Length: 199
Image 1 (cartoon, rainbow, N blue to C red):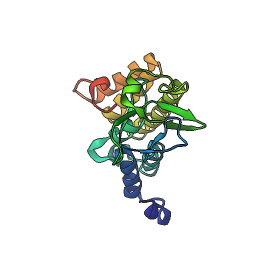
Image 2 (image 1 turned 180 degrees about the vertical axis):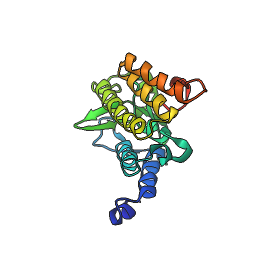
Image 3 (image 1 turned 90 degrees about the horizontal axis):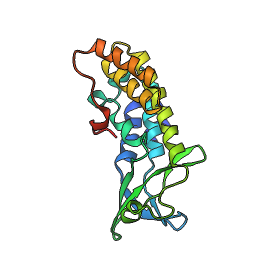
Image 4 (image 1 turned 60 degrees about the vertical axis):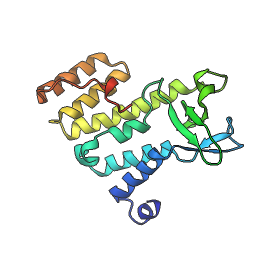
């Protein structure tokens, strides 16, 4: 996919492929330079950049991921503090890993630790910049949701997504306004994002 993008930076399918590959790869490998001595083989930062590039290239947001909507992007955006990235060790190593988001400069990064250590909240497993990283992703999500609802003002799904993004940042009044717009555009009840399986 990188080769295709190098030849044609407007190749939407290649950007989607690059995002999907980095999103779906949960392999963890040894890395003596990492604070945990482990790192993820793939990059969620790259996935986020790929998906946002797709949204930039395709103005019709509701058609970008066909029926998947924002789901691929929500899987790599960490907009809630209790969300963890998961992984498993590459063979011949074994074991499962978890990681909270952290800020490394301008990048939201993930340092994997053994699952037991993370659930026991052992020192180092909860980054001091976790909340800042979450706010960074919340702000990006709101920006993209606003673009979607502006590009497709008749879409109930766009306004539902916008409402969710506003709520995450504590903008309750604005969120209720967006929900009302969604209700006007759809006879169906507004989905409960906390149970949608996206996050």
